[in-house]
Image (cartoon, rainbow, N blue to C red; front, side):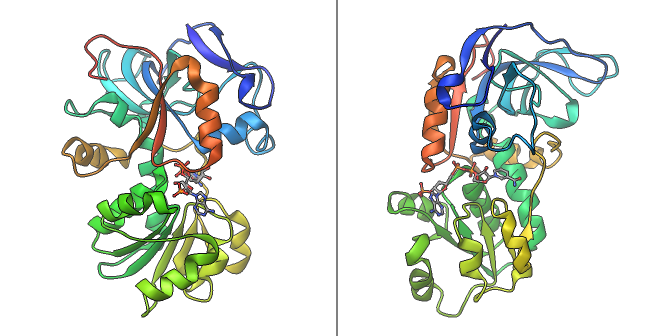
Length: 311
Ligand SMILES: NC(=O)c1ccc[n+]([C@@H]2O[C@H](COP(=O)([O-])OP(=O)(O)OC[C@H]3O[C@@H](n4cnc5c(N)ncnc54)[C@H](OP(=O)(O)O)[C@@H]3O)[C@@H](O)[C@H]2O)c1
């Protein structure tokens, strides 16, 4: 099969597009033919070697952990998925490949109405936002600040919070303020302008904060919000101040919380924006764009056209 492989840590140019051995589904496993792979910020951090102690990898390695495609084969003991079904989810064997091996609990069936390109945007964003917001326990009517609200995780959190009846304030650069309004959030600027903007839009204060952007946001929130009601997915040092951490091992997460979100997406009531769909040999460019850090939604690479798969 074709895959994007790295044989060392380095800049985005380390990817080599070529032939590798095809994997097979062992007992309890599922083999998926990949239509679309998503590129996440974590992939670039792993590629650069910044997380080598946390996520050690053996070279040659195939990166990427989020895909949508069609079940190609199932191993012994798998009865809840069948060959030919459209699925999305997590692929620890490496998503930048024509075939991935994963387990049924990491996959969700994709509703007929939902294109695979849309489905591929959802697993990491929705799973992470749901897992982090479960720690915040936001009640209807509360005011919540979401940092990096136009990104894939942040925008998922905004939509879940709005649906739960919260008043949502989202940080983003100016180009994304209209997008945040379209999701039902009040936009503010991040960084040095944040506190002044919050004074304007929430003079009575805020109840909780969700940090998907880091860069000192959790610390800025400390005078405004009890630390037990600040959750971060990026700023792990903030735990020293009592801020709650939603760490999550991306290679161990499962897809159990995803069917409801995919149903909402199929009904047009939930979406992660598609920042771009690049060709499979454009993975280095995808990493460069991800590393610039100003995406609205998810970067995808089209791995293969699968006839009849409603990509
Ligand atoms: N712990 C976990 O389980 C977990 C899971 C998934 C992701 N993550 C991490 O969460 C982070 C977000 O992931 P993602 O997929 O949502 O990223 P993404 O889609 O690439 O979005 C990044 C966002 O960051 C915003 N941003 C840029 N500079 C900022 C600043 N100075 N302050 C605040 N926001 C800023 C950008 O907004 P503008 O374009 O408006 O500037 C952009 O929308 C990444 O670091 C990722 O590794 C953690």
